[in-house]
Image (cartoon, rainbow, N blue to C red; front, top):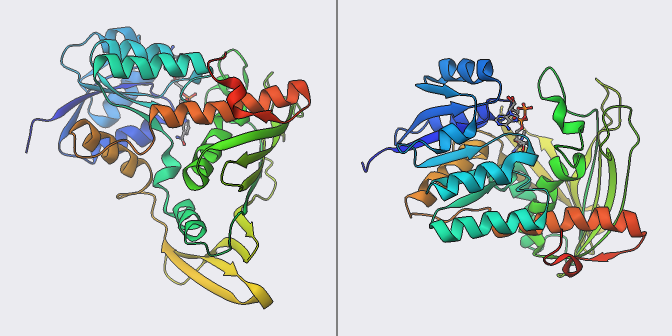
Length: 347
Ligand SMILES: NC(=O)c1ccc[n+]([C@@H]2O[C@H](COP(=O)([O-])OP(=O)(O)OC[C@H]3O[C@@H](n4cnc5c(N)ncnc54)[C@H](O)[C@@H]3O)[C@@H](O)[C@H]2O)c1
């Protein structure tokens, strides 16, 4: 086997477990250092995953010459600075989603990858999810016809202590659910339908926590003619969740809905309902380990560094998702449908 790739982890919060676990499962990488402003947390993760060094500042980590790749998993506001500093030191970067809050920062990150000849992958982990992957497969196999509509409605309380930091609801660090949660959805639907064309949206504050716009409703029109209807709210009180809707897909030839549980621990089906209510079941195995989910994402990143694959979610994907998010804020501000191209090069 070729030499081990030496990794640094920036961030020791909730998401670090997904990345550190995925790295620990590979025998061709080594986790050398972890950095977190909260040094006790960095030390605790170092202890748990057998990492030799724990530091408080990511600048210290990126300055280490014996690290070739880093994962950036800290509040979104800091993604661009940590990623570009790491890339300037010649390190490959897997940066959590959302890539950055502004298009200018997305472009700076993409430029840094290009200039330094390193891999930059964005953590749109849903692209490795067998559940949503099945819906995508059925849409692309034209099971309900095109153009079609992808629906997704989710409402609960904002992520926060004790499981997550309070920054999610603080507008200094986060754009709220539209970006932090919705970006997964917008990226995945783009992955399925192709590029977005325009966004109609309403984004407002309903809940009592923090100062981000916590409730967003969007219609995203895609160049393909397909459409997405999405509601993401963090406006409910702590411990309260509304029933989710979707993802499901409505088309001229029927509906895709599910997943429904089948016999067997990890077995599920999506159901396609066609004319006269005729049903087809499309089974899949839902295991978010192995080559799926975070492990799939990390395997793809490592193999991209080794030159055997390319990142499934690129800097361009990160930017294009951010275009949808920013168009939604603009649509709210102006009260009109915003064409995606209007944002080229702005903000
Ligand atoms: N892909 C996914 O499904 C997924 C899930 C959760 C979070 N995320 C993303 O991962 C990132 C981190 O989220 P989280 O849930 O782990 O947050 P968290 O609040 O659990 O942890 C954040 C950590 O970052 C540290 N930190 C804050 N500012 C820092 C700085 N300037 N330098 C170093 N460390 C700093 C904090 O001390 C904390 O330990 C966010 O961008 C979030 O959107 C992605």
